View (tube, rainbow, N blue to C red):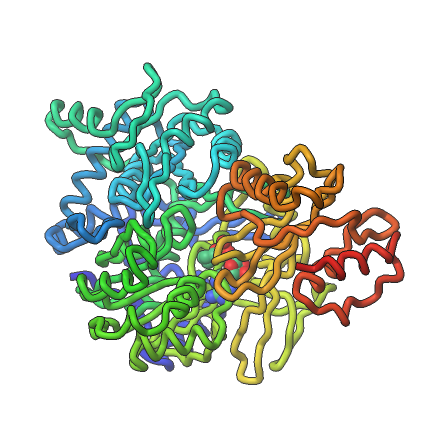
Length: 639
Ligand code: WT7
């Protein structure tokens, strides 16, 4: 049975752990890291500076994360479910993979990768639906030291191509298609389009899921199942794990920022392993035998950290759900909870709000008595959704961990520890041990005391933090470490209330959070501008009841689109969908004749945001604008 000596058991232990982590961070993390499987122990726990930045955890340590997620559990947990897979269609049979079975399948597919020429350090793009083979593919890469770059199934061919080119991937793993709700997503056909612009890709491995007819390119495309058969005819040889340096790259995951181009956030083996495990075990207070259900997609960091690596390294049972919360009906998550006696449900405010909209019908008469703990992630949770989750799903007896973190942080940073530290609706509350948040003003001066607001920074490294942005370290420095000297800047605004609890107030940069997905306004603008009739555009967020933020686009066309305005809007939306993916589709498009610009040509987004938010009386100073009259026009045309 797995045990977690570093699991915090009460508030006093939290305070002790927190204090130690600040006074002696190396001692603190060194003690946690002792409980993992290392081929060779590290020479030094931490070496760092935020100037370059240069951050090394567990330097000199040799390990492989899959030995920690699989091999080390075999003796005690071999027959314990590692992954429970629930398909999209409730009529289809679920699958359970024990730790032994998952180990065998990962080794088998790792051998497939080797047979296809994959070597340590190669970048592999994974574009699949939420099926066990996705987990197997990810772990197989990690097993042989290949760097995975998972791309969410909702991204378009263009977005995939950008990501493949940036990382120079040489192999793609995909499926014929994916089932999501009532939709079939033609993954392989999207990959075929993407690969026209990706000469670095020599091989595509296609796993069968939907049996959608697809074309297979001779010499490039092979079937997952055929490749597995080959390994079977070789007698299923074992696949020893590649020995990795703690600071070797584990994966790249692309995320949006305030420029037009997504950046490849890089996480490394040792620190990511220790941090996802530590935060999983502590935040959710995982106990052996519990069933952990995170509803995120593995295409996002939440899935990497809390469907795969965190739970599996802890020997937990993790539930992988292929579908969506509202199909075939809005009771789907509750049925799954009942079916597998889920103990912890970790989901997103947008999902909660959308399910709230269906009323209590789909919840009533569902047996949710197995639930002990709840979690929320992705965006600030409004109090109404928090209480609904607490009362109607947790039946008043489950703590809620509102976990604030980011793709870049690798794991939870500020969150209640379920049932151990206090919770407060709408608040991420207190930092986990090892996390040192500070609030600063625009000049980077620390704001001390309580009852204050500022920009959220972190002043000391933690093992799960990003190390670089792939292929462009300078960009990493500029984005995260240059705004404020010697601090990691999160891009979030934050308040610290009278009790010292943190409440995230949202992004302070030009990044939107739509249904918990991060979307850069510049990216959406670039996509809109691809439309032949568009001259210029400006995109801002506005409050949206379900998505949290909606996308509001102000668009200048070369001819007045008034006659076929609706048609042009549809066209623009389709363009964005093709360039980025359906997640970035604007909710509102307003045609304008000009945009509010300063004399130096900078768009005054503050004004556009205020108009989109319908705060028309309070636009601030518009006297510095080149053409103040345009503001009145935009106000009149507000949607
Ligand atoms: C941004 C990170 C972390 C995995 C999912 C999103 C916002 C995330 C919370 C929360 C308030 C939150 C922040 C953050 N965010 N969790 N519990 N409360 N805001 O990862 O795409 O990297 O986005 O999501 O604005 O910066 P991501």
